[in-house]
Image 1 (cartoon, rainbow, N blue to C red):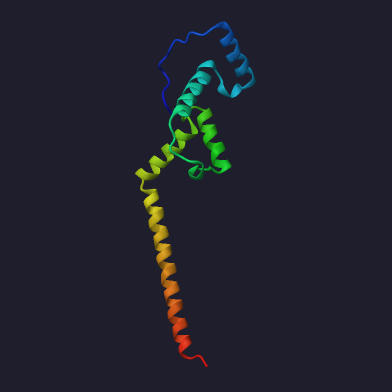
Image 2 (image 1 turned 45 degrees about the horizontal axis):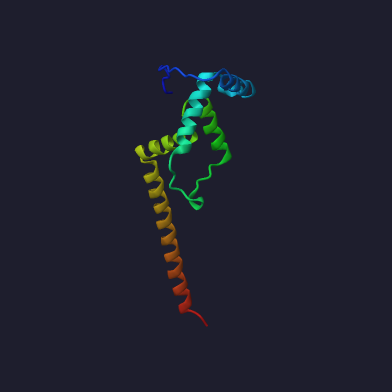
Length: 131
């Protein structure tokens, strides 16, 4: 978990503070003004980044994983779902999990290719005896 020890001062109007407090009353999952403002600022930063993804390349996460990532973000373990997914991918790459998965699939494909080749040889042998 990221240590949150640095403090900042925020100057806002009384009306803006009331609006934040009203929102927090309806959305208690944020716990405090500080947590809400930190979460909001980081989400805003993420939303302003330029994404090089078109609609066809969008990644859709299974709902159960999305809910898990949302809980992790809401509890402060990550700043966003995007950062959580990126960290999972970084760990997978560091542990060479992707490479292991690809090699396992290659092994399965080679086994399938061998089985198909064996079947073709059996078919050729069978074809010799056609009536």
